[in-house]
Length: 349
Image (cartoon, rainbow, N blue to C red):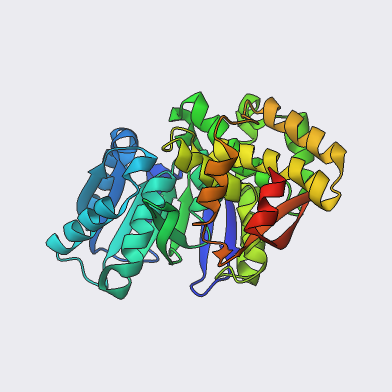
């Protein structure tokens, strides 16, 4: 079992332990006694784990309600959020009660945003069941839904009271979801965690799933170190957006048929190539990145046009008027923040 403490406006632990889901109340009871609880999940995840979690909570005296919606990024929208909040109100949830996000990034974002805004904030717990959510979206308190104009444009900061990660839940993931999660894993390797890149080069995670607990812990610790410095993303936390400026544009242009981790991988590759021309970045870094992405079966190119990607960037959260803050990889294992105009951004593509 690995326990990583997150020092934020509300401090909490990230617990990474195999088979933790079989004794979920051991972790929840010390933080939140029996009360009404809504478990939010999607139809894929619920079929595997909803009964296990619900039964344990019910046995310990919690009043359990279930909110299950169809899986997919297209469900992470304002209409679904409002439906969830209306469901919470219909069950008379109070500020002393609890929301549990049981699932991947879409579920975690949706439940976290609902918890942030319902009654001006109630407690929630993240139980990530995908690689992408385990290493990234379940930690750090950023929650949001997508709008027609772009990804994650309506959201709030809301830290959970616990993140409980059971790596054995990843065994039910299809191979493409392992690959998708590796896009975010590789991103962390460029945020001053060069040892992670070395590990991934020698043992690509997709082909060595037995290393996943250690990989998750490395990524979570890297994110914890950044969040503790800059919880509200006014500075260094923006480094976590490596690959996202172009990646979000690719997601939007493909109507989310390109999943997030894949889009981030392409975004990193595009930005790295542009950085050689614009910032004098190390060309060897680009070659190493491409080799690493391909070793994890991730895409490195896209048919989405330059115009579509740049148009989406104008609606990016990091865009401020005529400028946008981007994350530029400079050497293998390191990246920097840079503010450019939208006209200058075009030169990176």
